[in-house]
Amino acid sequence: MKHVLNTKPFSCFVTGTDTEIGKTLVASALVQMQAHRGWRVAASKPVAAGAEWRGDRWFNEDVEALSACVSVKLPQALTTPYLFRTPAAPHIAASLEDRLIDRQHLIDCHQQVRAQAQAVVVEGVGGFCVPLNDKYNTADFAQDLGLPMVLVVGMRLGCISQALLTAEAIAARGLSLLGWVANTVDPHMLYPQENIDSIAQRINAPLLGCIPRLDVADAASAIPFLR
Image (cartoon, rainbow, N blue to C red; front, side, top):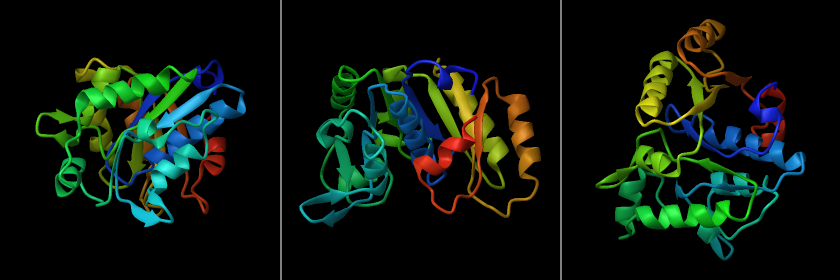
């Protein structure tokens, strides 16, 4: 790429048009890209829902994928302060475990992570505006951090409206949209390029890459498609 992704270490908040549309794939690629350039880069997924017990700890695939790509290893208590067992909306998963997601704790953990790295890639949970508790959501959290946003658009029917609405919501929060990534969710989607072109014409931010359906969906496989 000829813009920020190829120059200096950068921090960002990776959000998406929905859940299960490739946020972790893109976030991991952005982390590994910077780590390979020699930068001290950390990653966090402050809230994650859906875990299984393996050995002596709770395991979440997204958290592990991010952790595998960093050059700064930090305790999971800082990078994922809220890990829930049930794969449900965070406020529901928290309620099932009789826990409360605390705004200040999220911010404090992020600040500790940020202090130990040149760059931090933060991955959100679900879409851009997901409840974390009764009065706080992921859009509020992104606004608290104030990081440039990277929007992952899941390429499938309906993605144009989802992308434009999310971009509008990001702008309404006064946040900067660093760019967006088109990630193929439905490999049989009709007119994918026309959809990408339609979004690109309407979002005032660069297209950072188009990721096809990958046989192995990991950071190393995705990086070549971030141009």
